[in-house]
Length: 395
Image (cartoon, rainbow, N blue to C red; front, side, top):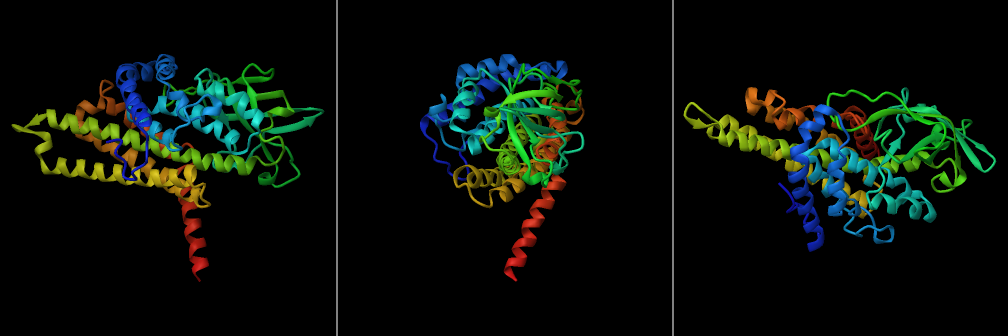
């Protein structure tokens, strides 16, 4: 299902080799572990140790930050590869290597990039993006966390919720209000908070339907003092635009994870229906099954093409409509991932409804794709708003 891409992405031999290595490591390490990790909820440290050895953490970063300096779409292609085998591991990896670094890459100072990015590229640190709050999910303008200037430091207070990698991450990008007298869009800032900073603590680990190896906890900031150098970009009140641009690009990664999960579920269904016999025939010989498999394939290829187009606009062209395509890709990929996982489970019959079946886990994991990093409903609002704007411009 990968990686002769429909967009003919011009990858080097080294880049193609690394993608092949990503699949190989996942087959050898992730596949044997994923059911156990799902059951126990343990952090997949053994898998990440193999990722470090294989150089996967270096793929998304430039050479000046100890990375490989590969094609801008490599993070997307690796996310797709990881999503095929375990969405939880792909989510942890993507948050550390792609979502957290984006504010630094888009608006950080050279000193901030040099301080933090090499540690991420070496796989020495995990990271987290802390924006969502109990009353500020899709509506980020309802943010309550504040950062007050105190001499040459900022004091942060507030509570974040549903934060990926919380408690395990070494670095946190925290979005907070730095000017409560302004519209929240004009008064937000991003800060880097290091694990172990006094006043930084974590709430109860969430017991989730899927992504069970991913630690999600509240992040609690109580009089957390950070130096001015922790303010991303060095100037206050630019955090809304920075967070929006980061999330738009991050949605390309989530779309790729969705494509990967759908591809993995399809492959499981294709293998099972080829092996399974009923009424003296292979299940895959029945036309109704063939039509289901055909629909799954078309959805996957459509989602992949849209995801690559969105990523090209965001990560290569830095196109002004990048957020529009990212919303489309994330919305569509997350929806078809759930549909394909559902059909894959259906094609397994009763065998798909038990824990021993990989599609049972994929089915549970897939649901979160239409929720995190922007719900499907919110993204449809965004897509519709761009369509209405186009119509007005056309007269």
